[in-house]
Length: 78
Image (cartoon, rainbow, N blue to C red; front, side, top):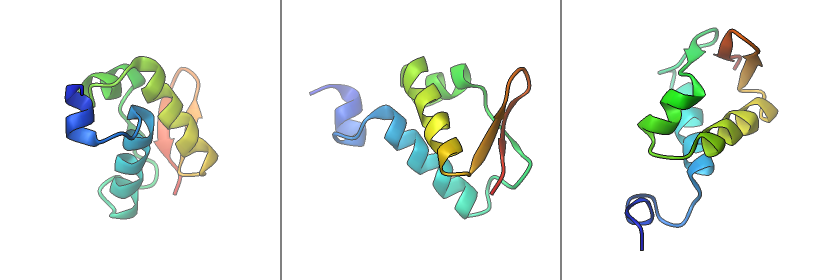
């Protein structure tokens, strides 16, 4: 069993990040219009791969919680 499995269970890194950011948005800790940290920073912060962090932001975008603006960043829209 890896360290991340011990810490987070069997959920994938992208799903964990989706849940964490969604919770932060719903609780008002991240507000509409605020910029989300860059993908590389999220990957390092949550100890997940770049691809998992990118996938998480894609899922959040499909949920209409964030909008990604190429060259600018990812912003909360909810």
